[in-house]
Amino acid sequence: MRHAVIVRLVGLPPSVLAALSRGDLVGAGSLLGHELPGYFAGPELRHVWRLRLDQLTSDPASAPWSIHLAMAGAVAVGHGGFHGRPDATGTVEVGYSVDPAYRRRGHGKAILRELLRRAGAEPGVSRVRATIDRGNLASLASIGGLGFVRVAERGRELVFEASLDDLG
Image (spheres, one colour):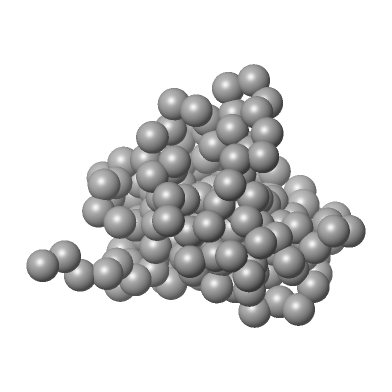
């Protein structure tokens, strides 16, 4: 019998994002009180950390709508968050990733469910968007059964949206 995976999302303050954007896992881990695996210092994620640091620097109040560390117990398994505040239509876009060492165990779907729960708790949010590379079968599977409907294609990316009323 497979047990449901539970993740906790931990906010990443600017000091941690700055350390991560430099690839300083020891410094970031020390600030967080959690050891971080090498995945979090990879070039793709370093770009993401810098992008979110710039976002928080220009709009500190957007922290709840930024990126968070995904923890399964005491282990950092990935990250998840929103690309920004809700837009004028009440739509937020989710983004998440799982450390390859923890993939195919339900962590991606658990991160997504927690993001959906958070979005649903906000009165100004009515829709959630997920943009996924058509080759990312794991993320396509993660949104399965959660009420998302494909609404557009942008090159290699597929755009899905769901009304919070329809999310499963």
